Length: 428
Image (tube, rainbow, N blue to C red; front, side, top):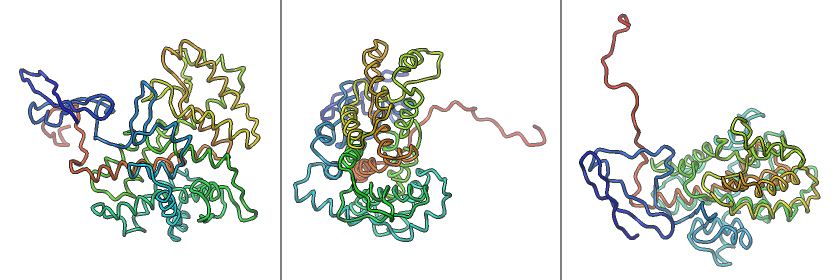
């Protein structure tokens, strides 16, 4: 990193602070010594102007619509790669050789089964429990079953825990779904792909053999790829913050799942699907577009715009193509698909949306695909968690390996009462 400096003048003090430059992206002002030198903190609710770490994993340029994993554009990965290859890339920093990918895939496959006692753990939940509630509990409980991979100071144990989490997350998720619908659990099979295994564990029943539709398997693999990592978002920051205390990896990933459950983070594709259902048919779109423009109307177009991307979400282009492939393969005739395409067309040609840069994001399309495949909306965020697990682990492991890592401890701007004396109860 190259360095120059920025000067701050406050309360008669002049302080020079280093300005650091990364490989690409904005420079950052290093304020770590600001409080010690001035007694001042910075104020940044949501940390939207604060870099909490340096990272070599994922880069996003929201203005240009760029998403890179270890330098590779997400569009190229989605077109040419697989989720297992992206997992290897995020964890190790480079794309694998053919032999390396084969060995990595075999390792993940060998870890897909979960401890049999976890099956009884599920029975402690109500049948109508939300799958994300089950995921939080079961993933957090993994540390009670796999004591041999919780020593975060041991790189080998960190690697084993990473492989276990990536491998077992689809099994845990499929079991959560099966439990909610009252069907028996389906064990994983070692002759199937990561994504094919998950589809079979989710939808197979003992009464007949489950046939994996190649287009659906490809679509799910792409969805996993497109959600694998997204820089320092809320759930990733949660994983890093939990990990900074020295918590074991299973607890940290459970914390990430809890954060992802929030509708502002992991529930966006469900909200987009519900909006399309509310609109119903293409002829009703103009009415809803006018409602979206009305500041006094609470209706909002879900699946448009993004907290980070101020241009077209690079993942949305891939998802639009995937929607067509899935609907063709499954012979789905869903008015939601036509409504979505027409809504996209009208919004992209409307000056209001162009000026505000409200472009369709990945959630706009993923909900339609998942619904067509047969997932209930309660499973949408669970699928997000499966995909994001590898990103969480890569970020967590990077943080643990950083010699400059410290326990997270944000500051605050206190606005409560100043010091005051206690008044006895009888005098109040």
